[in-house]
Image 1 (cartoon, rainbow, N blue to C red):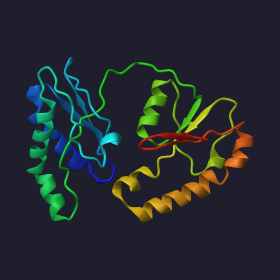
Image 2: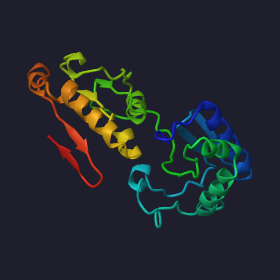
Image 3: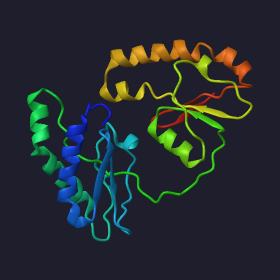
Length: 215
């Protein structure tokens, strides 16, 4: 969704249509921000799902949600596609040469744990999941600074989440990706040697599609 440039009005209209259509199934849709939609599911109806990052860019055959006791989740995916295809928001987007919002990917799910354990005393991130996990762990997250030198030295572990390459990668925008990668190199990685001494060590974690590299 982050690559679709949804407006607040578009998200509100589309989510309202989904909420009305699926109300009889007990599904409650909401969109706290335009590019993140959530659905509250009746107890006992959570499906087994495939994380979005595992499905992006792939054939979704075999990745669709499992069926619930009452809710037919695979049919819900198709019904959502049909509903959105006929929605006036998409007619307007297509007329303006913008990509249509043509589906909903149900994934995740579960109960809020209340609290979680975290080894980090401070977190610097704009990434939504990282900030949410920090809050759940009792750590107030800080916005991501512009460069590594702005991260204050601390005797405790500090987590910094750099996700500037994600959006251009998903959009397939090579030039934007290269520019973002060069900025990361200049603002963050070029100073790792100095930071390693000032922070009593630095660990770099690079997640990939199939594996994660740690240095």
